[in-house]
Length: 173
Image (cartoon, rainbow, N blue to C red; front, top):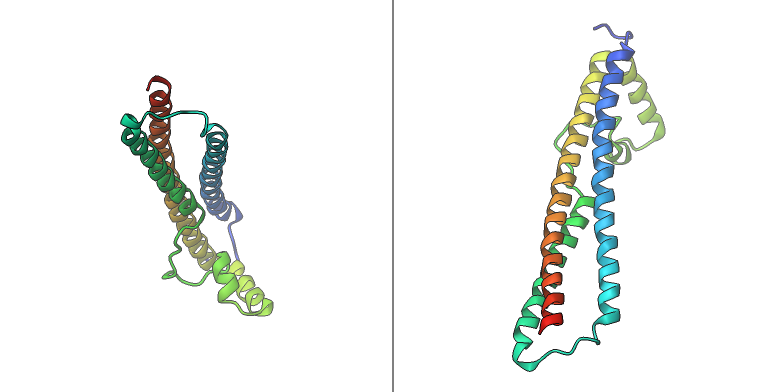
């Protein structure tokens, strides 16, 4: 690969892979937002009806156990939602003109950044290398976000099971 000749079709494949990972990042964040919204609705409803259910003294410990289970599982689920929004970044890679974090903290002026970007865009090997690394970074971020949102969903199912158990307990106790 000669400097100055860039195969745009090959480079486009790298961008498609980067965009594929960004798509998964966006979906994970959307799912986390929907989970937080659902919890907001649940807590709003719980606040509205919380004083309407009388509890028998001999069943108070079961009630407290179910409440504590629901709240604990909810906190864990919400924690994973927040982890979905804040992935840990790998700072051990080469500085890249495509990575927003490096642009902000490594290239101190627009002039330095522009010179490096032009140089990279003219060198096909360097361009492909940096795009491959960016794809790797986005893939790692997408994987972490997907893992966290999957855990958030799992704990949400557990917390809703505890909530439904609590409602059944309240109805039949």
